[in-house]
Image (cartoon, rainbow, N blue to C red; front, side):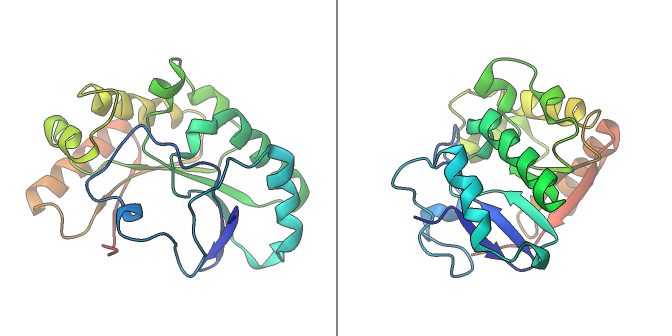
Length: 200
């Protein structure tokens, strides 16, 4: 069962396969691993102490960041994630990034942004599109069409507690005008806009 795996200069944490979305473009629909990681489909969710023990199997000096991102939405296990992040910072002094759909407020039915303070260095959120209706079509979020507004609200809020907040779209999937609209959204929220490469 793959709990930690390498991608380039970073070490990734695969905490859960749960996700409130069923995105039409999700990579787990077409593959079961990333960068020769082995299958990221978990037999069960690993316990916090089990995840901590996995880090001893890796040379932590090699990595720039520890990234919470696997075949699921990492904030489905937000409290466990933050406990592991605190452990990694304390023991290895590594930067922490979360790749997320930005729906943790809806998952937990509360304002989760303050929980990230001091534990997470970068939150990278999939923006996907500047259009609320199109976002719902793409993500098929179980929380419905209001997921888009909740994601943007979270992005603005979490930027008060986390040094780097990034909203991303995928190259070639939007028009130049749509990318401009996304950039304007990010400017309004005070976060960074990133167009990430297409992965098939």
